[in-house]
Length: 455
Image (cartoon, rainbow, N blue to C red; front, side):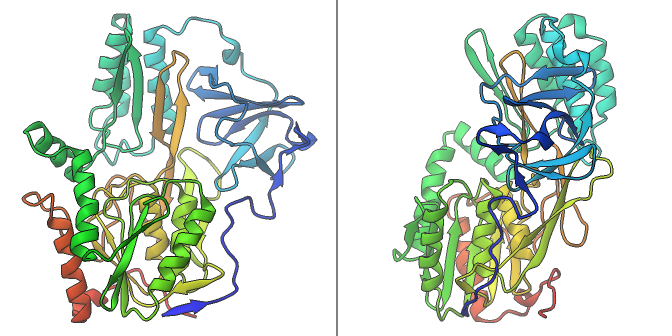
């Protein structure tokens, strides 16, 4: 069913209540001062010259080493909360800050950042900000205590990296990354690949196809096997779509890319192509994430009306009301007939947020495998020694109040997408089988445990 309605589009810029923090390249009076965030480990000093970002964790404080004043656009908009509180926003995520009298003395500490001190800083950062140690069965306090007992042994970068590898063992989080340079050699710690990507890596190590080759094969199978050579690649090849008889098919390979106009034009074409379709399969089984704003823009093409999709709040953000995010109908043509969302353990980050948007819609049935379980935004913590640390620091909850971090968003209907014995061709077979079941109106495909009644 294709419908057209003139309804509000969810903003990709700040809502009306938010105000620009800068006017004529100068911060407005209301935002000037020193502010400390609730959660996130941010401290910012804003004077007539603009913002200066600091990172705080435990007893540590250091200036953000990046050259830009506002490297992530955290302070583009503001909203007063009272005499001593404010929210700053990048136009999407709002963070609550409290006014403090001045920068803590630690922020001007000139002590050398030795490898041991960097280790203690990273331990404190995870202690303050990381939300899922308990779900992962990790006794972080014990690990920090063990670290404190051997700080004297961490005398060089190589030992530091090895220590952090040991400390973070079992933190299989796709949003935890450590990038280092040791004696001119780049080293990275990037856990959280999930079973399918681990199998692909193991297969490559045994002489099988590399992940890059597998990615090419995945796209080829979508175009040649699923869409039988009649598919279209649009939005800079981020979307593949087509028709298989009376069923529409859209594969969202990425939520990345900042070209809103390019994406909108491509989606206009996709939705027009779904006119008259009995059902549509939306496939994010090989989507590694990107921008939540793009996730919303795509989901809006399937929305019937405004519905709560999820809430999020920073870990440790005391007395902060979680921010609500809604899926809202696009203001032009949309498809609001039966939709089948297909996910896997590769589906991660903004692709999981996309899944939450889609799951909020009563005409969507979720099939496939659990998503990866890494919903939180990537929180960047560039370190004083030039290394780069990323981590999760937010708690996302669905409309029923459930968090799916770590374990992933479970489908209504379990389907194996990437079987271990057929990593190359299993996906295409799973899609075609789902389409056959849709045509037969299999009773199990009518399950929708998250459906909300139309009003």
